[in-house]
View 1 (tube, helix red, strand yellow):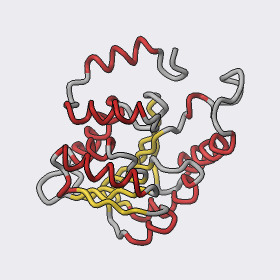
View 2: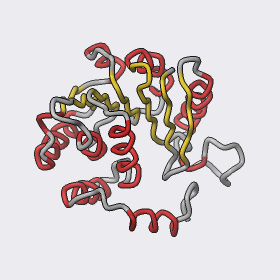
View 3: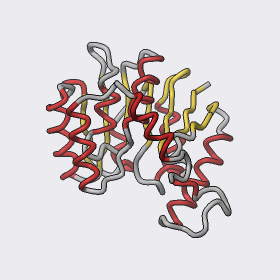
Length: 215
């Protein structure tokens, strides 16, 4: 059983989701074979709904992986819109480029290869939506920079904020993930929800998704 949402409920939600396609399904299977920490289709659909709801034209993603979540985001862009996505691993970035081509969104996506602590200086705002799904120890480090890049009324969406329940003291019998990552996410959650420029709500979907709007 899932720590956050029971498996039966997740299967039910997955069965209702009609927003995906064969390319996304293929990439998801490839990611599972490589044991990559991709979002699932329900979180992908949430990203697309959020982007569409605010009419996002410029978006930024931290943590491209092989392009799965980026395709969900880019699919919400209007003509002339652009997604910039950052990936530290050159091999994953190459795979993502190929997947963006397969999905027909390559012209709307710019991949920036390198450590986000450094590459964040290569982009300028304002952005309508920023998706934070990179290295967990960098969540706190990047928070104020990402808020500064976001337009008023824009959204900062953060994945993995419940970390399979491990951020909740005593919720699980023993740690299954890196304790330093758990500590970093717990600190991030505190800072995110207390940030003076943000209003935040957390959706207990999959591994927890925080949705923050800039005041």
